[in-house]
Each structure stands twice: as C-alpha cells, then as structure tokens.
Image (cartoon, rainbow, N blue to C red; front, side, top):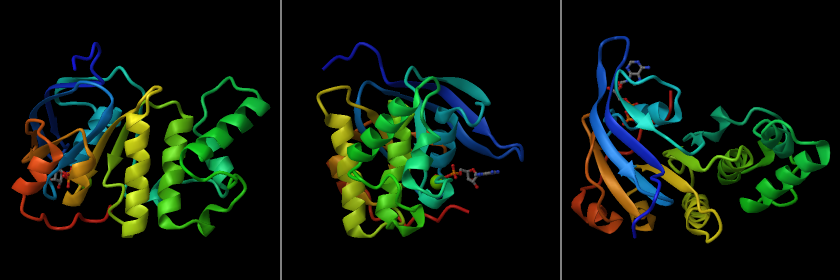
Length: 230
Ligand SMILES: Nc1ncnc2c1ncn2[C@@H]1O[C@H](COP(=O)(O)OP(=O)(O)O)[C@@H](O)[C@H]1O
Ligand SMILES: [Mg+2]
C-alpha cells in the first residue's frame, strides 16, 4: 500500500561522539507509514544513539532526519522518566499548553484509559508494577500528542505478562483505525519480532533493509541480553 507522507526519513545519517567514536555510519531508511516497526541489534551497534538522533536530543554529524510527526521517547527503565508522585500529576507534565483545567483533567483521564490504567489518576507511582509504570510512561507520550513513539527496549526489565501487555498496547495503538500511531521499537527479545509490521537489523552503526519480523526472527541466533541503562 503506497502511503503519501512517510512517518520518518533518515538519510545518510552519521554520528560521532565527542570522543571521536563513530556510533552511526551512513544510515538510510524510511518508515513509510503508521504501524509497529522494530530494530534489533547487538550491544553497542548504535540503536540508542539512533533513537536519540531521531528524537532530536542529539545533532547529526552528517546527513539528516526528516520527521514530520511529533516524537516521544520511552526508555527501558520507566523510573528514569516518571518524575512526579502521582499518575495524574506525571501525565499533566506532558500535556500541551493552552488547555483549561477541565480539559487538562479530561486529557489525563483519556490517556490513562488508553493504556489500561483507568481510575488510577491519584495513585502514587511507587505503588505501580513495572509494567504499569511503563504503560504510564506511554500515557505521558500520548498526552503530549506524540504520533511517533520511539521505544528503547521498553520490555527489557519486565516479566512476561507485563511484556505482553506493553507489546499489545503499542500494537493496538499502531493498528487502530482512527489515527494509528507510528512506533519504532528496539528489542533484544526476538519473540517480539512477530508483532511488527517490519523489522531491520542494526549492525556496526548501520540499519539493514526492512524485512518481515518472522523472517528476521528465524535468521538471528539469540542475541545476548541488553545491558541495563547506566
Ligand atoms: N555518551 C557516550 N559517549 C561516548 N560514546 C558513547 C556514548 N553513548 C554510547 N556510546 C558509544 O556509542 C556506540 C553505540 O552505543 P548505543 O547507541 O548505546 O548502542 P546500543 O543501544 O545499540 O547498545 C557504542 O560504541 C557506545 O559505547
Ligand atoms: Mg541501547
């Protein structure tokens, strides 16, 4: 299916750290439209650096990122991105400006509903499970009106039940009929690849061609587990 405007275009992208170490080298790929897209690759292959460049947190050394959609990053460890004590107050931080109090309240409730955390507006964050925290981080991204979710090993620290809940949530947001989202999801868990629209291998700072998730899953021997974020 041809899609008019791509969700993301990455052209000849290169990035060297101030140390001179080249983390990305001539990356070229396009995400043609909404859906769940996955990247897989060994430790140090450049995946996290790539997401930070796409999010605009780092400036490319070479090439460019064309990103018509508003991005939001979701990290491996939700404790690194949830800031305020209650679920509702944390989501409020992500809301766009210019909303009145009833609208803000409504948007918070709506974001909680969308991630399966209805009624937890006043719940202290420390009382949530790891999977619930990760879904709260996703609620913040939704409340910010992001249409491009950049997820950096979002299930690496979760048990299998929570992993499935987060994966199914993102899959359904990316495949809904009304305003489906685009998600770029980094994983070390090869069983997740069968959920994606397409997947690509990141090796030595370059992104390979899109292929079906199940083909890539079959092709790859199990990779070592990802390092936790430092
Ligand atoms: N802040 C940093 N300063 C210097 N080098 C870094 C920094 N962060 C990552 N790197 C290096 O960049 C390369 C790519 O890292 P990263 O994008 O984190 O890989 P991945 O997410 O695939 O494991 C690695 O060689 C890593 O050591
Ligand atoms: Mg990484």
